[in-house]
Length: 280
Image (cartoon, rainbow, N blue to C red):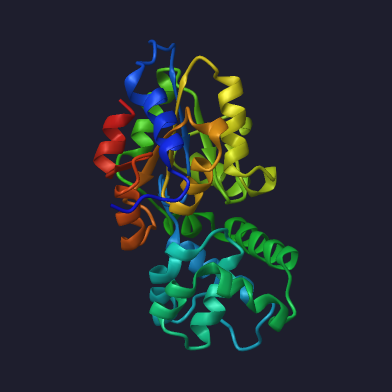
């Protein structure tokens, strides 16, 4: 059985201590820390369109409000390798340059990032262009922007129920916070600003979890994420051993990542139905 390098004997013992051998006392509440894209919302199509529109600031061969249909289909197929929004412009550049989907998926976000010096671009310029493009789209036609997103069935209803029951909900995402707020508000869900921690906060998910442990020291904290690399980073930090980790198999993960998650004793792999049951 495959076991990740960081989940050695000490890691397994820590996991058993926190989750199995010594039962946790009843706690006043459970806290849900949720990724956004790939856990609550499927935004792959909107991300591809925004990437195309933003890229027109840099690439003279791109034009029109929508990318070619085959480009958009390819982008949806490579969306699992995207780590944060601005990289979508670089992934779309690779698609426009004719690279096959399988190669882009195999080489991941790192190969896309490597394009920046070749193209004379930097992260700050890409982040600014990507955010400004979304802002302009929302300002001009918020209905079509919202329509490019799909919330996974049952997730919004469960969030509303947990809110009504007083369960703390945190969203930890690489998306810029204002877009998360707009998407949730468009569905009638409002969270306090301090509960949405995205790209603008500058906080990595490990930091969000550390702060959640300090704030909710008497509660059980559940972290639901569709990126295996992110869950691995949490696993590598012993101070986060008390966090209960869930790999969302309905998100943007690849088959090999699902298999690795299933073989990892530190993780629980959940279908969407199981996630909704977990939140009960």
